[in-house]
Image (cartoon, rainbow, N blue to C red; front, side, top):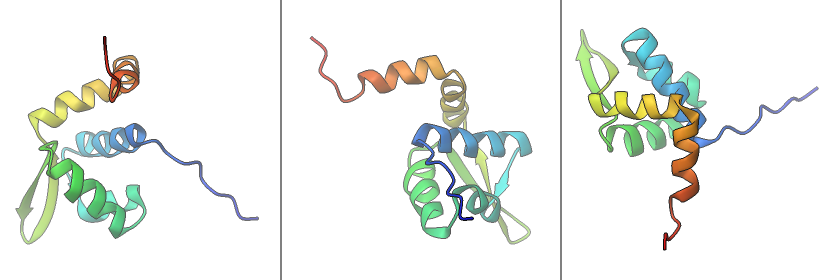
Length: 98
């Protein structure tokens, strides 16, 4: 029987990535690919979003690349963990306020 996993929202994916990195204090590319599913998603999420927006930073240690959460990423992580604040923000984002 083929069971498809449910579709995750962007906030859930972000929280999962940041939870993993914070729990371990760092994550390898392979760790993040396992969460995201494939290298294309890794490029989209890590290179195109998290690194670009300064939520994580890349470090090398003994030829291995690791990713760690920045101060900005810590704040974003706190907001994501408090679902009420993020859901409020998502409701108003993109809408005009009078």
